[in-house]
Length: 144
Image (cartoon, rainbow, N blue to C red):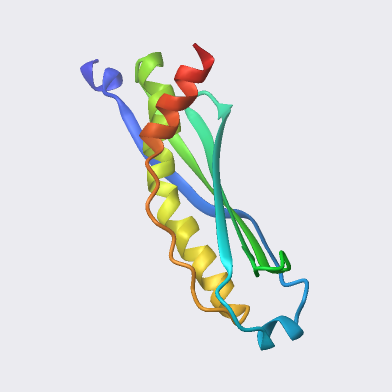
């Protein structure tokens, strides 16, 4: 009986849900000189699929622009996972979905961004780690 009450947190599936790359000024953009300004945006979302199963998605959008505001590339990756959460207190479920799951997914999204941009003919973009706990706390303070 005590085995039924054990908390369960497991990864059921990891997958790329959406992947897009745009190089609107190719091929002439490859002849341009100068360091682009790179902007990165990260968002997370979660959805309950059925009892005990949740889908969590981390979306990373990377845009590189030249000084004259021309877009060199726009890359967006949505990395998702299905996670099993059972026998976990409700107050901890939100924390797991907003912090632990994105921490698992982000390295996969970071690799997909770097690989996609490199395959497009640009130098790799290496994304810095994200503090999902701080993002969660800011969102909680914003809702309070």
